Amino acid sequence: MRPSLIIYIWLFVLKSNNVHRQSLVDQVIAAAVPESPEPQKTSVAVKAFLDVDLPAELIELLEKIILEPSPFNDNGSLQNLLMLTAAKADKGHLMDYIQRLSEFNAEEIANMCIDQGLFEEAFEIYKKVDNHSATTNVLVDHIVGIDRAQEYAERVELPEVWSKVAKAHLDGLRVTDSIDSYIKAQDASNYNEVIETATHAGKEEDLAKEVYRGTTTPRQWQITSYVPDG
Image (tube, rainbow, N blue to C red):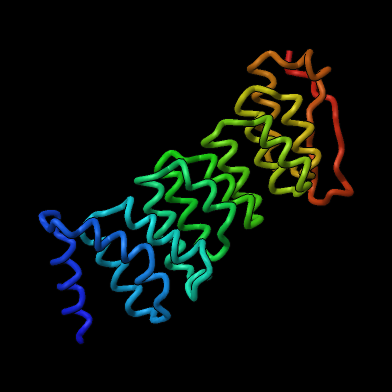
């Protein structure tokens, strides 16, 4: 039977005015699709549930296929679909899927989470796949958890992470913390902004009038005193 005809039949029996629809859905979720070893039949059933807009039932079907033993446990496309559907219809389960699954497209799902305002979920995805830079961006730009970002930097100890944390501290006028973080990053590229921010924020005394500057190599790194003009 042609796939297009099979889809037509699925859409017909899944019409909302079909008094037997719920019984059919229950049977499909319980056994018919999960026990089928044929990817084509599974794909058609998933597409039908998607086309008739049955998100709760689709999630239940995908959970059965992916989370219970089946030939489709490691199917990345189905894992993506489960997460995308959950983000719209069942946000409470999304974190559990993130922790349990590993074959989904991390970048795609994390971006979707950010678009949906699910920042903790995006953070968890990036952390899971060791995308340290993106993890820090979520903490700084979306969760606005600078202290959490610093804790993360202390855990991973990567210069690019410390640089992002340093800039976040600077934007929050935490100049001393910013300098400490830039030093840990061995990143002197932003020293002009550090000096300007410290001066305008009246932080010279807090810093004991110390700012940082650096030349081209970590070996030449140095802390130097800064005395404002006048």
